[in-house]
View: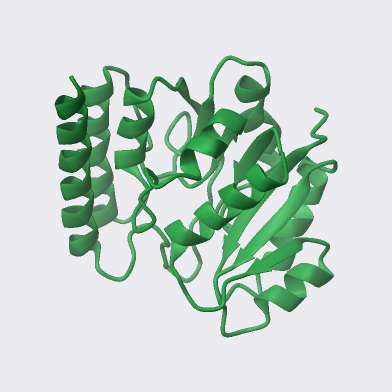
Length: 236
C-alpha cells in the first residue's frame, strides 16, 4: 500500500525503552509515511531516542495529557497537509503490522475513520474492571449510533483529512476522547467503521485511556456523553 503524504502519529510519555521498537515497526508497515512522535514532556529520553530512530519529534513544554498530545498531532497533520493519519500508542500494545488493514477502508473512501478493534475475532481480555467499563460504553455507543460497536476505547485509529480538521477544533475533548467522540462523529455525519487489529497486553499494566482513577474516568465519560447528547438535542 502506498502511503505517501500520510502520517503516523505516536503520542508518548516516558517511553524511552519502547518507542524505538514501535517506530521500527511502523517503518516496516508504512515505509512511505511520516512518523511523528508527540513527546508530552517526558521525564526520560523519549524525545532523543525517538529522533534517533528516525521519527519527527514535537515536544510539549509541560505535560498536558494524552488527549492534548494527540490533538497536537492532529494540528500538526492539518498544518502540513497530510491526507490521512494513523495513530497508535507508544507502549507497544498496538501492532504496527495492522496499519495497512486499518488504513484500507479510509484510503478507499469507504469510511472517514476506521477504529482498530481488539475484540473482533481476537481473544484479547482486559482486566475485569476495564472489561465492565468497556461493556457499558459499548452498549451506550451502539444504542445511540444505531450500529454495533465492539471497541469504544481503542486508540488505534486511521482517518482522512476531514476528520483531521474536525479533531483539530474545540469540539475535541482533550481530557478523555473515547466513547463521546464516537457519538460526536456519528452526529457530525462521519462514516465510522471498525477493523480487526491485534493488540498486546501492557507489560506494566498501565493504560493511557483509563488513567490513574478509573472511577473518575467513568464518571467523566458518562458526563461527556450526556453533554454530547444534550448538545445534539439542542440543535434539533
